[in-house]
Image (tube, rainbow, N blue to C red; front, side, top):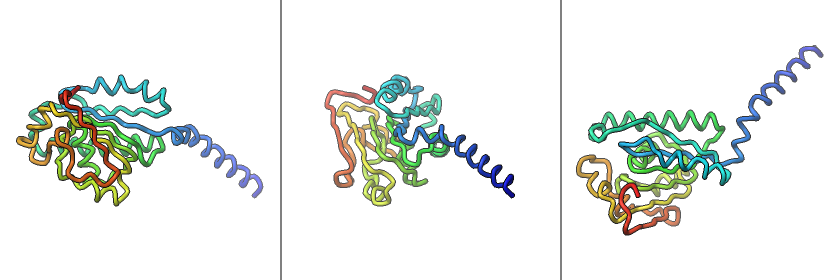
Length: 200
């Protein structure tokens, strides 16, 4: 019995030791990033050392080259939403994180918004740039569900793609140009930059 108990304690100690390296990231906030179409997200790679120096765990997500034609196809867009959900769950498991933050651009903002709406993914903070999410997105509802705690929408008055996307993608919108209708109280902040375009 004593030998069995000693062995059990050894197994418990080894199990705990195996988990500790993963737990070290829990004290450092995880920040994911997600690019748009027709790019592999060079800005994400440039952001990695800056986030690391600031004490964050940078997690750039890359779904590869996604062309304009695919953007027009509902099933193709949904496939990318599902890809993002799977990546979110995988990275959260790796980094022992149940509520990361995320910086997303263009089609990346669309993927994040739909994943929150459909799969109830949780985020601490969101930063959207060049957003193409529909303007009537119900942020207050998801904040009430504690899915999002704080967010910033960085819009640009010269964003051509945010202006025209809703004409070809019915469930997208001009949030990167005109902001959101539901500001969700003090949770959403907006920054409007007059002279910038979609990728500036």
